[in-house]
Amino acid sequence: MPDTSAASTVAVVPTEEPTELAAEDAKLVTLARSARARIGAVEGAAVRDQDGRTYAAASVALPSLAITALQLAVASAAASGASRLEAAAVVTEASTLDGAGHSAVRDLSAEAPIYVASPDGTVLGTVVQ
Image (cartoon, rainbow, N blue to C red):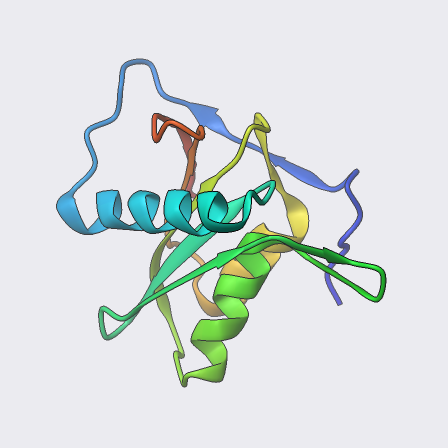
């Protein structure tokens, strides 16, 4: 089971210049921003599976359940039958990617890029490992 503690984080490789994403990857950032804004969550995330289907989610913090946005987006994809992810995006105010979300993506894809963006949609960096 992946470590879901807040102390477990993954460094984001910052972009030197503003990153221009391909249209399908930019869509993931837009979906993640929307999921976050809809409920005022700490994070929003979106993933794209091997068939091009997208799944968006926001972080959940209940007394009996805490799950990151990226974990929930990956869980939604897996529950819908996805066996591989092409890409993921997280919108957050943090400068790092949570380790639990990173692990969830890597469970379905060793090389899918994970774009980390600020709430305004600016891509801060990409995690490729």
